[in-house]
Amino acid sequence: MDDLNPNQIKQMIAMLQSMLPQDQSDEPETNSVIRSKNIDTKKKRVNKFEQMSEYTMHKDDVAIDQALSKYPPVARNRSYTPLKVVCRVCGRTETVNPAMIDSVERYKCNKCSAMAG
Image (cartoon, rainbow, N blue to C red; front, side, top):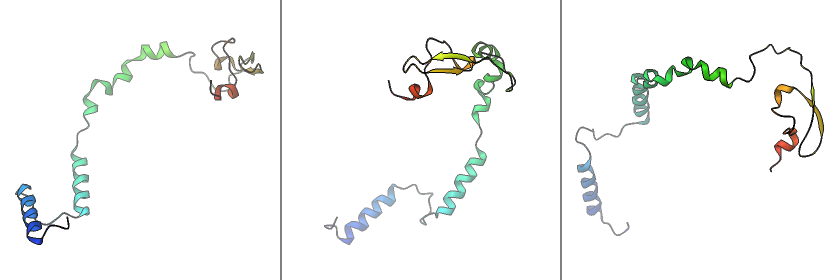
């Protein structure tokens, strides 16, 4: 870059300016002008997701929700009979809520669940 003389630099600038579209002004835009243009375009955008079928799909799909729910919604103060289970990794015996486990034979305590392997 040190080999270029001022005439070559001016030629290069002229070539680059000729490649720019002609409707742009010679003055560079400030950041505030650019920011205001971005804000204006965001206001004019249309949310196309609202016209897609996926927008209301969750309302129509009640059957899958019923199939996936393990238990119906219940009050939080419902009592339960604790279930005695043994961790299959460390052998620790604990009492847990039956809704928290799928199978007594496959129970893993929190400590063993957090370990790798």
